[in-house]
Length: 200
Image (cartoon, rainbow, N blue to C red; front, side, top):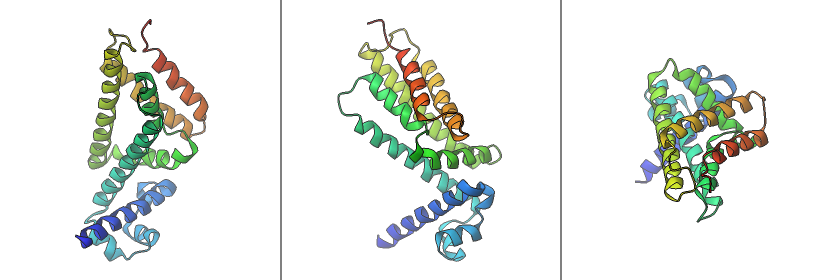
């Protein structure tokens, strides 16, 4: 068992090195040699953890999406228990809209992976899975708000989620290139969530 823990820890350590390189140079810069140097391990150690560069990139991308999810859960939990559906939905959208200063690194890494995924099916598959899971959560939150009569009962929850998720992704991209900061992005999210509210 200890060997398994050490192996997983090393894989995650290497994944962080991959992310550091991708943030600076894109996936093309994450060669086995550069990753080994960044991680402070031998190339043999990298190759024992990952059979191919693609396997290493897929693991690193999963590592990033899992980290974003965990940070999101923490942000949502910080909003407190017993919160309204609108509060929970807003907190969720803010967690996946990577516009805060502490989220910039993950936003840049995810953007680089997304660009590379167009030509790498295994990376695209990871991104599709993460997108589907996030979409399912948004649909659930909207339907929860409908059950509590906070959101309009006639609202199409799936259609609403299909509007909100690309909105969050688009705001992230705009913030990444310096088009706007966190405050206007969050205000945009609030307006869209408020548009789901019932008439009272």
